[in-house]
Length: 158
Image (tube, rainbow, N blue to C red):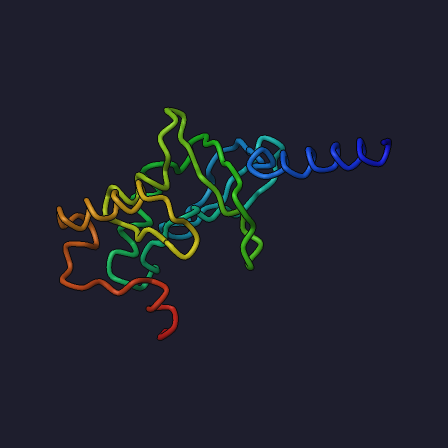
């Protein structure tokens, strides 16, 4: 009976450790690397590299790469943000959902502006795909080009 109780407790702990384990970090954005990566100075005074989850912006040398970087800067540089960690990538960056002080999701703001692809390899949110589709249909940002090259393809060739 004791073993059964311990097993039930174990199952409860394991089942509760999915989304609730998301780590939330607050801090000030101190530098912008490109359209989907920035450095945060946390409230604990640590500099942390952050990669926006679920989107992929043009690389700096691609068309609209500098525009995407500037847009991200306009949205968050020098401002306090809330970072909700989703993962850590192979470059040791925190991959996250990022929110400004008005609780706007920065990831989706980049999609709405037409300055990012919905990165379906890592995110399958249909609402985010709708945002990309809307930007495409309205020829916003990089979608003003006839056939923009996705950054994951561009990186393979450069």
